[in-house]
Length: 91
Image (cartoon, rainbow, N blue to C red):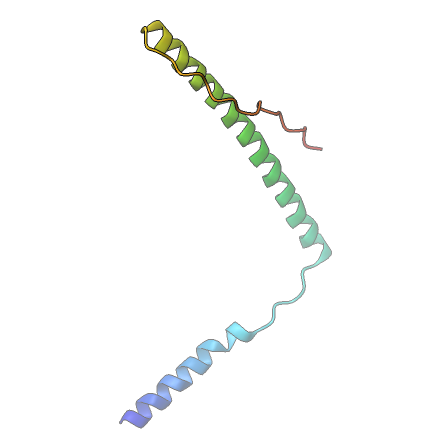
């Protein structure tokens, strides 16, 4: 009984592992171009998102400092950060 169970398990493992060793065909030039365009679009969106986040963080910090000063609290000197740089327009 143990031998047949072991043989069945080995056969199942061999059949399941077969597709894992299969080699995929090479990408066509069209699909490579589409992938490159999608990567460029994603990179541009990430730059725009980072710029917008930087602007929002600056506004929140300014509002916090103004409200703290208005409330009469002692306000520490703000930490210098690099200015927000707008990303170049996508071509």
